[in-house]
Image (tube, rainbow, N blue to C red; front, side, top):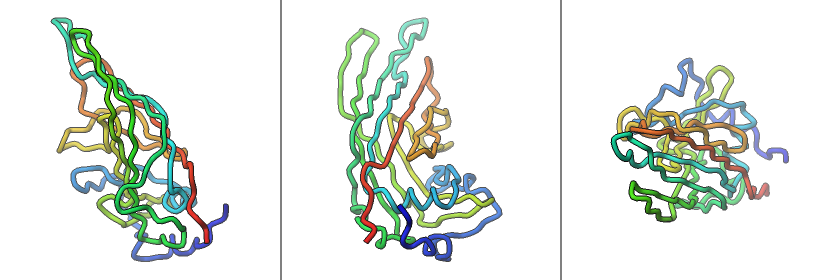
Length: 207
């Protein structure tokens, strides 16, 4: 589908700022809020096109270390389902977007927990990702566009070396083919693995 308003994105000076410093080094609220650069068309597509997503994948993280051998006991997450928009509601039309691209998405997953006694429980866990988190500035660096994005899934978030100490690479959150690294607290035992895929399931109106 062609974009109806392509010039608004790269030429809107309040929206895009060219920089000689890597935006991935920026920290806002202690988070690496500009984690990945991408070509112009991909950045435009992520911001303008989707109004809903489908989330799939899995993750596991050791929540306990049992006995003298420190045997890991895990929580397991299973992702399968649609996102819903959080406040503010995501715009329904591409024409409503230029620099005003803030949009939040919520997803629920199934989480199965185990303990050292062999007991297990199942609960619903929430995940989210937000375009325009902390900032609505888009950076152009080395011909790549960096959009501000916060995400939280299965105990992991953007890289954060201070609050929460999310520094252990957990896996990727892939949004329409763009991989965003997910980090958790370094596990005391065992391994932590996540592989989450997010794909557009409904597009905004082009009128």
